[in-house]
Length: 73
Length: 433
Image 1 (cartoon, rainbow over the protein chains, first blue to last red):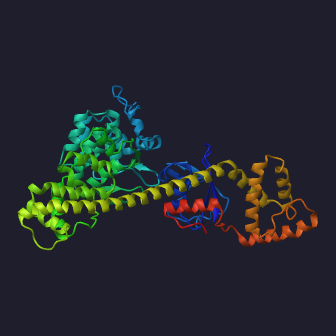
Image 2 (image 1 turned 90 degrees about the vertical axis):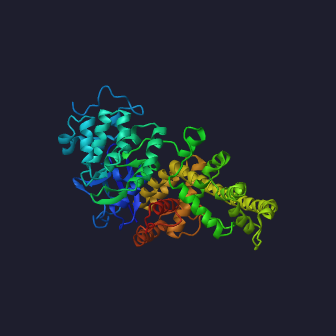
Image 3 (image 1 turned 180 degrees about the horizontal axis):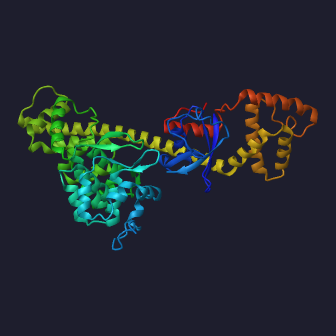
């Protein structure tokens, strides 16, 4: 289990607990459940790399405590 | 400016009609080439031509969230605001299904509740296939009536949040709408009669279409039908319906009541009427039993509801606890895990000076967690915190090693983990590892 921090720099900062083998799509759904936006509207990035929905966190080498950027579609 | 709404247009749902589409999606539409090339200077007539060329529905797709032409035309309609008769024409036309669907979508966004139900429900009878573009760019098969059902029941479609409409039974109760008549009602009535002759009446037929069955009967039931959600009671009315119709369907009902009376021999017509009264009592008894069952069922539902409420309360309490202290605690825990144990003890000592109740709760929770996680023995104040240096060093080392070995395995008793796992289960994900 890892905990990932997502920050949208506009006031929404959320910590989400998830597994390493969860996909980005799952992470988006978890974030949507916590923030209240819709999962389809969320975009997770790191600098200019937009993370794709079907790839797992482990493959993106997202570890515990890492910060990701939260944007909206 | 090309993107401004027609100044003569009315405001919809209290806002600029274009605002019904969200800001980000709207910007994507304005930037798209379809909008810039094809939708410039469209009027109601030319819009129809464009709508006839549509070949799929959908919202935005792809990594860039590119809008579909369907969505662009919908926004164009919101911008120019055609009259209601034009929209009704869109919906009524039979030839072009995408025009129909576009009109339905526009009406769902802008129309009043009564209009929405009145014009969209006939479209339930349209079974044609339409292509729907998903958000990853792939096409999927859909049908017109499925699309209409989505519009009427869900609150989000084609990347647009649909305005809230009241449920149908609310409108029926207030008298604004007639109860729904399905086009398949006659077919179901026949089917019902066939089924009844075959099977005994006691069997609960989980036929939602029984609802449709009674619409032709007395208005009292129509009212009851909508109020009673319970199928059992519908069953009871159904049986009474059978009895009341005795004059029109005598033969049918002889067989029915014969079965109800559990008699095997066929009854003559004159005897039938007598037995009808006779059996009616028995039937009534059975209904009374049924009602008891129904009552039991109701109790069961009630208990279930109560349990659900209780669970909800429990969740609410948990949330409340969480919000107040738990986050603070969590952060505090985090800090402490990073630092050494001495510092932790110092913190605890420091917090002891704060309010007692919170402190006790904190302490209890921490103690419990620490004991579970680290396997510490006694919770007595002598066993923890503020004692001398030498005992702490070996404990600290041991703890660091334990922490490394454990890694981040989620403690299944942690309420937060339980909460998280519940959320994951509701989303369809496996629990935390």
